[in-house]
Image (cartoon, rainbow, N blue to C red; front, side, top):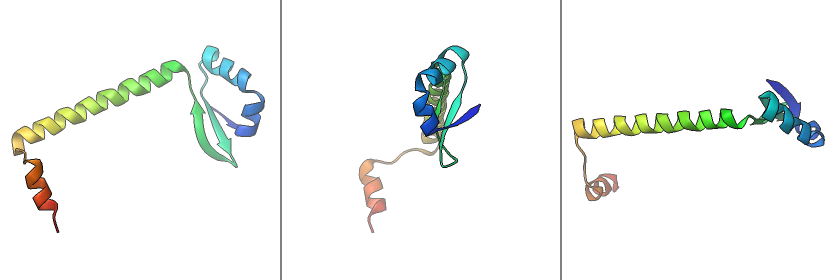
Length: 84
């Protein structure tokens, strides 16, 4: 994965887009040596989003199982518990 300063990236943005789109390269943009953002192929983004969605579904299923095992309380009861 290449690192590139944002100033240099701005000067060569079209070339960067081509490198990422056709070469499937991942490029990290930096400022003052600090990593800020990454330019990645759309396929990588789609994979990240699918992974996040799968993890969200797993978390929801785990929360549902916990609710079924431990039970739930009403919103009113929760508000009463939260009152000082």
